[in-house]
Amino acid sequence: VNFLEYMINGVLLSFDRPIEELENKTDVIEGRVFALRRRNVLREGYKIKRKASTYRKIFKFTSDVLVKLKVRADFPIDDFSEIREPLDRLIFYTDNIYEEI
Image (cartoon, rainbow, N blue to C red; front, side, top):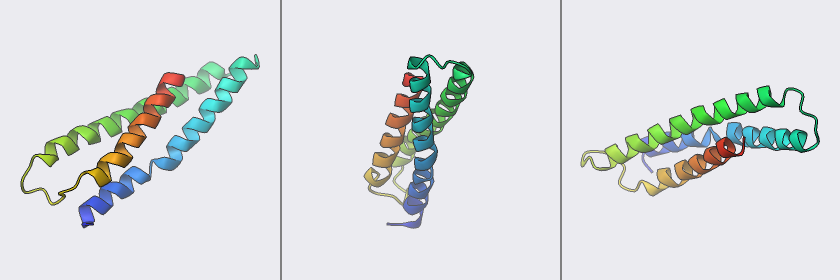
C-alpha cells in the first residue's frame, strides 16, 4: 500500500465516528417523534440533516475526484477498490441519515 492510498483511507476512516454519532442522534430523534416528546426535535433534526448533507457533499466530491484521477496513467494508485469501498460505505450511511431525517 503506497503512502497516498494509506492517507486517503485514513481520511475516509476518520469519518466513521462522526457518522456513527449522527446515526445515534437520528435514532434519538425518531424515538422522540414517536414518543410525542417533540420539543426541539425540529431544531435537532435540522442540525443532523445539515451535517449529513455536508458529509455527503464531501464524499461525493471525493468520489468525483477519484474517478478523474483513476484515468490518469501517472497516478500512483493502481487498485482503487481499497479506497472506493470505504467511500461507498460512507456515502451509503450519510445518504441513509439524510433521508431518515
